[in-house]
Structures are given as structure tokens and as C-alpha cells.
Length: 285
Image 1 (cartoon, helix red, strand yellow):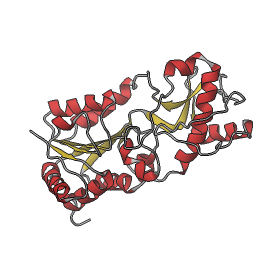
Image 2 (cartoon, helix red, strand yellow):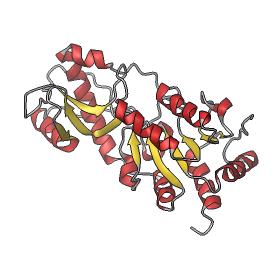
Image 3 (cartoon, helix red, strand yellow):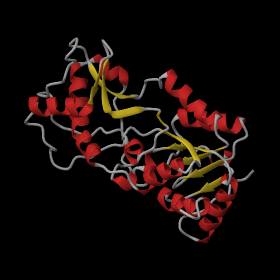
């Protein structure tokens, strides 16, 4: 099927929303979200218009050198301050409301900002982890990010925003001075601490992907919102939905790698499209 493509908020977009509402009506919907759902909360997109080119740190680099860990933790701490201040937006709240109404079976997110959970989504799979947790790579002890942030601030009082910090969707930020940074260590065993997120070069934990696959298997349709589907995990879940003959609706600004496999493609803002869909799927809300 050739997907119906539109741009928000023109007349053709309205037709695409109507088509999507018809496709989704009466079905249990699993939602896959990407960075585009959090831009309205002030968190930048990876690949959206105007997004700067990035060369994120890999897991091997993080493990290889104390200097790399200093650079990562300094930037991550500054980014965390901005992440922690971000609030769920209308998209997060709509998805939580659709879940509460029984239309959405759950949300699978590629984001690490924790905003779906803060908006009230209960059935949530954070494929790439969450920045609000920190794990020891030696003993496995888990810490709340807030407590680690307090330690970092106390041990690095000189660390400031260094002017205009450019934050990334993964919670990292560009820093220029970091060699004096004191990296936090595990208070249980003294091991290396790492935010509980999947770095570039790491694999998604098997149990996480299995949980996401189970959510797809228990649904009748899929909505993909705010993701260009460049990351392999999203394409794999889309393929699982396609093999199960679940209709797929994609909402994203610009082209995605899954457009040719969608029943309906809405090319535009996620918040606008979901607001319109909610009005049609829950007319009495």
C-alpha cells in the first residue's frame, strides 16, 4: 500500500489524520517514539532541521580512558541539569491519556529523557535506558541520578555552564574544559559508574528488546511518532509489526526509513497530529 503523505497543518494533513483514525479505530495501539516527541519540551532532535552534526562518545571510548570518562561525565552533568528541568509536553500527556483510556497498550521509546514516565505512562519500555539512573559497571549497583549529580556538584564546584551549552537528545552537552573534573565512582565497590543508557557501540539489553517485542505482539496496530527510524531497533520493531500484518501509522517531520511500509504517513508535527487523532479516537474526551 502506498502511504498517504501530508504536511501539517494543511488540508492534505487533515485527510491523512482522517485516514489514520480509520486505520486505528477499534484497535489496540502500541506506540514507538523518538526524539521528535520531546522537542516541544526543549530537548533537541538528532536529525531534525537545523540539528548540528554530532560525534557521540562510544562505549569503547568510555571504557578506554579516564580522560574520556572525564569528558563524558562533565558534559553529561551539564546536560542532566537541562534534562531534569524539562517537563512533559502535550504529546507525552496525550499518549498517557490514550493509555489510560485503553486505546494504547503501551509506549516503546528510544528517548532517555524519562518524560513519558513523568507524564504518567505506565506500560513503558525505555529501549535505550534512562538518564535518571546510574549503574556501576563492576558490581551492578544502581543509583538515582539525582544523588550522583549532588556528588558531582560538590566535588566540582568550578564546573559551570561555560557559556551557552549545546545539549543533545541523549543528555550530553559540549564542554571545553574537563581535565580537572572529578569523576564519581561507585560507593559500594569503587567501580566505574555509567548512566543507565545505551551508548553508541552498545547493544540494547536482550530483556528490553524482548519486552518491546511482546508489546508489539499484544497489539493490533502501531504508531511511530517522532522517529526517523535510522536506529536499527526501531526498524526491527516495525518489521515485527509488518510481519504480524499490523497497520502502521508514521508521524514525523520529513522522510523516515519506514515510510514505504506505512499504511498512513503524516509528515508534520507530532503534537498537532496526535491532538487531531485523539479528537477522533476519543470524541467524548
